[in-house]
Length: 313
Image 1 (cartoon, one colour):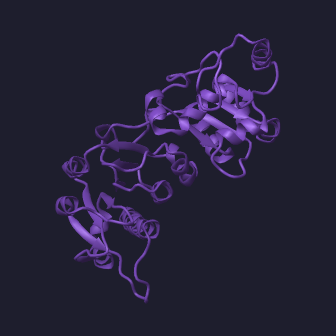
Image 2 (image 1 turned 180 degrees about the vertical axis):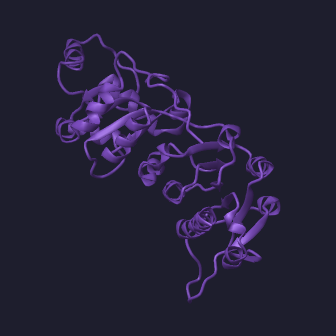
Image 3 (image 1 turned 90 degrees about the vertical axis):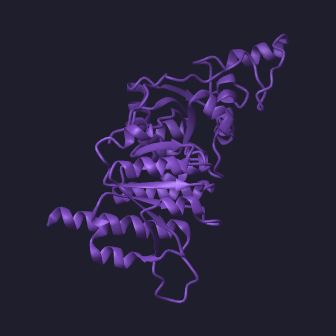
């Protein structure tokens, strides 16, 4: 399964003649503002927090603006490097230090047609969402894959995140699914936006490695996956099937999609009902339970191990 990436430039940052940090319009009639505007022209010095391109990019910190523009922000050299490799970068904002330190990433982005914009430390801090930003923030084109496309060829391993609202958890599960060899991760129902800044950072670049699917109806998504001959296993602490038993009987070696719910509420009854099995991770010690990220890692790697073992047989 391969991702279908839009070409850089498929979406555009909306910028205005002159904007405040919050994006509101200001009059450009005063001479002081004309002077400030002239400093913000390309080649005339680093962009500031009030430069229209920076103001427009900051709007992408809100989901409404991301969805409208089809764009999102990737922060830090690791995420930006992976975004450049995936050919989805439209523009890189970087401090003088960041552009110099990560010259290889910046050079590759420039060769791919991305715009490179130097910004002040204050402007980069406004674009970033971390306490200590690492010098680079990229504006990237979103690259969601339709569920039908992701299922072409029959994935061996996939993950479905149903109603998971915590972006850190969602990004971590996405990263784990990628590490385990999954080809697709489905964000179903009212799950967090996969292009949320914290989710992007938690994925550590894996967002750009697997097919990322957004499906508004989780039940329909599960039924579509099962319709392609992929077993759907619902991970739940109250499951009637033990994960070790599944592994021992060889059922994990078949194409599988793991279904995960939120850490607080788990999976709703209607999703548990349409799964092929409701699976619990055995607790051998005195721990009350595993958190979502840990349980997802155990389940995904159990399937990955079983599938590799069958492939070697």
